[in-house]
Length: 79
Image 1 (spheres, rainbow, N blue to C red):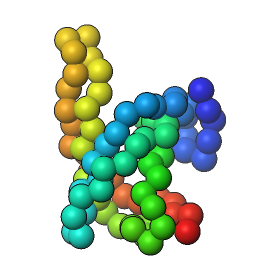
Image 2 (image 1 turned 30 degrees about the horizontal axis):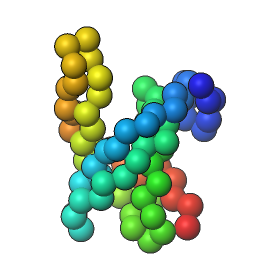
Image 3 (image 1 turned 90 degrees about the vertical axis):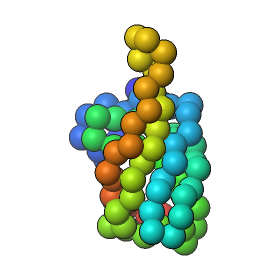
Image 4 (image 1 turned 90 degrees about the horizontal axis):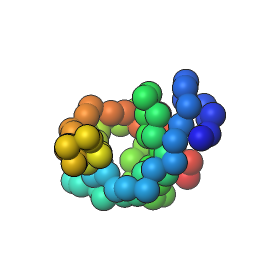
């Protein structure tokens, strides 16, 4: 587990998520997850800080998998 800039503990994640925004959809790998956020490598110049997106992700549950669509905002962008 990693303790990063987000509050709380980040856990490595080996799954993909879809970042949905006004310009389209981006399927990207999630590097880590916490209760307060996720780190995705979106690519240079794709989205900038404070852009609102919707994050679509499928997560394991006791009964298999559940899909979620969550409102999100780009907090940091490293160009």
